[in-house]
Amino acid sequence: MLFLVAALLLFGVVLGTVAHAPLPVTFAGAAVIGVWLTVFAVRERYGRRRHRYSS
Image (cartoon, rainbow, N blue to C red):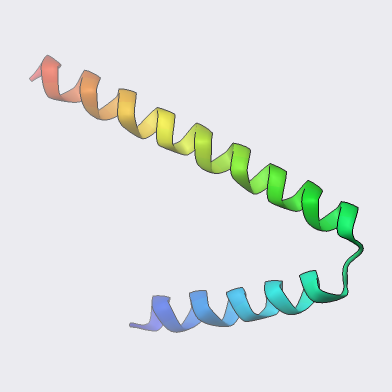
């Protein structure tokens, strides 16, 4: 529960920052986050597949 409260607080701070940031900075940040999430998803998918078959 504490993690959820901290995540929502951080989310509010980030949204407040984005509201005052220039549009190119916002898009650059969104692109970085999108690439990070894509890399994470690919690693999770292949990591689980490899781990499942090796057991």
